[in-house]
Length: 223
Image (cartoon, rainbow, N blue to C red; front, side, top):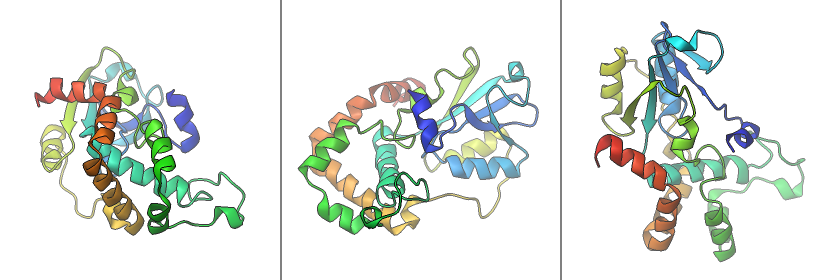
């Protein structure tokens, strides 16, 4: 199932490799991936795909950054809609030839036209839209089997914990790729946050979809 994401530009098994090939950070969309990529590159790490460019038997630690699944879904679904629905001729396409039917739609217009039919379609396919909402465990569970996993949790302490563990030097002006800096994405995040708050049944549906991710987080972080 991961293969279908390749059409959306996601590279399964991609990430950052340490200079000595002993550590590999899995590319996990919506989990500080742009920030970690920028920071790692500036500390001498290189982009890599498992199986290429080094002796992968040397890797001793697979590093995975996890995030609260519902929080990630809100961020991810907003990114998906902004990238593929509001602008379905690009920059992530084109999936259709430009025409009067493929004009740009703003988040305000999308929200105004949102109805029960759209709601049912979206939540029927809620975690399979693209890599931004794909279950986290599926992105890394088959990578380098037998190699120990080191987990971090997305949040305020992430930068300090990564710096300590990886001995990365702090760098200013890193690419944090905050969705809230984009007006459309911010409006979509606010809309779906309110949607889940007002419809506990929809939140529970998302939580059920991500049951395996929640189980993993509970086991690793005892929360």
